Image (cartoon, rainbow, N blue to C red; front, side, top):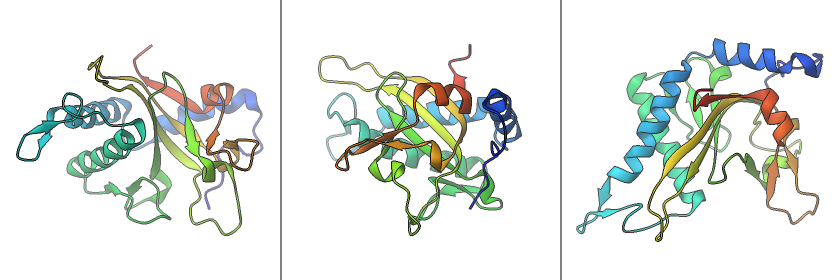
Length: 197
């Protein structure tokens, strides 16, 4: 299990710690942004089937399906740039794996909300026998999905940083299906890398 870089540090130091974590990451921000945009474009410029069906003009996918496809395309594009990167293959691995140094493996979270960052119910509930520890680097992508009445699509925001397991808060009800980290914490532990500010 990875030790949090924020442990024993005052909250006033967290933003500078996050900036250093992002600076120390082996992929620079511009490359991450390019990979995300290229993968996003792949979704909407590709076609499949005998009728050359296109996502975003012929069929419209929900946010969860779009997020899964985007994650897989990011993994392929990163692997094509450097074979040290690959998509996670088991439930215990992060979404993107750095083969020669697992410390830099990272999770991807996507959302069709403008600024939201959400995980599923299991993200907010910790148990000793869980199969996956999620502390570490995170790539967070917010986007606008095309719909039948508005076919425009865009990447609205890309953030990169570090989130610890304990940052996720599940919904109060045991039947709640969502977890989040909250806007205040996100501002301290995620750096906006797109759009440039």
